[in-house]
Image (cartoon, rainbow over all chains, first blue to last red; front, top):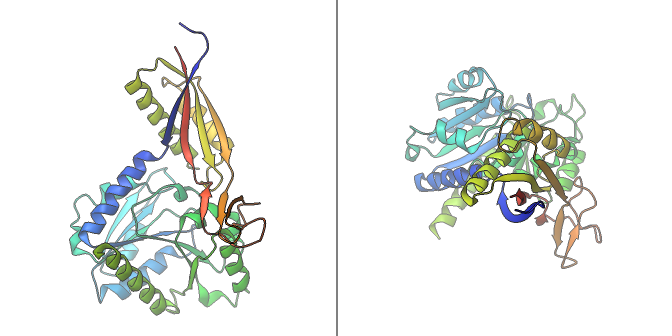
Length: 227
Length: 115
């Protein structure tokens, strides 16, 4: 028996369990032919309003559904249900982010082949969701004009984990003297080459462009699968 | 504050590892933490201590090695460490470099076993 501790190599990703479930989900989405998009942002940046607008617009032309994460209440699901799309609330209790296992559980009894798009609204939080892969095709990070142009510099990890940035509440840009160029510079500083879209859920500004972008991304992903 | 969730994931993994490999007691866990993970070192350390209570890992220490962000600069054709995570660009030529090589690690690399 030796008194000195022995050092053994391990090399394992801490979130291996989450990543495995996320990989399984991604495969399930691929086989079902559903394109999955998640939304992350700070609380109050307009995720739910944006999603309500998307679901309402898309519901008319294709099959859409949403999962919405919150610490508590079913309020967001009730709000989104007005779009007539299928919506399920995930209440996380004290957990400040969604994990792949929660998505898996929420989708357990869903027939995903009946869907073209699935949206996942994460818990409002710019820090915690960044580490957790949810199996989504694309992750959008939302930044509202009322939040300040330096948000990307304050939360670089979440921007690093996302694929596309959406600037929301553009109808208020002038009133709050939003400096679009500064916001863009900051986004590009933490995530070089990041695609940026601007929208207003209230006036509908930028929604056509957003939906076109979504459609293009979905077709591209399908083409990649077909190859 | 997701450091508690991360700490619990570390503990679960280490306990599983100890059980399958038959380690009697874990004295320390070595972790590599990339600066782009969005995980705060101090918060993780205190969460770990808290989460270890009443588990076989109680009293073990978490040794964290922070991994700086390294990018591949296509212009310099070399790997470079960025000056700050607020500016993901080559520190030598200033080219914005989306190709992150290191800095997203969140992995247990070694265990200290007491036999």
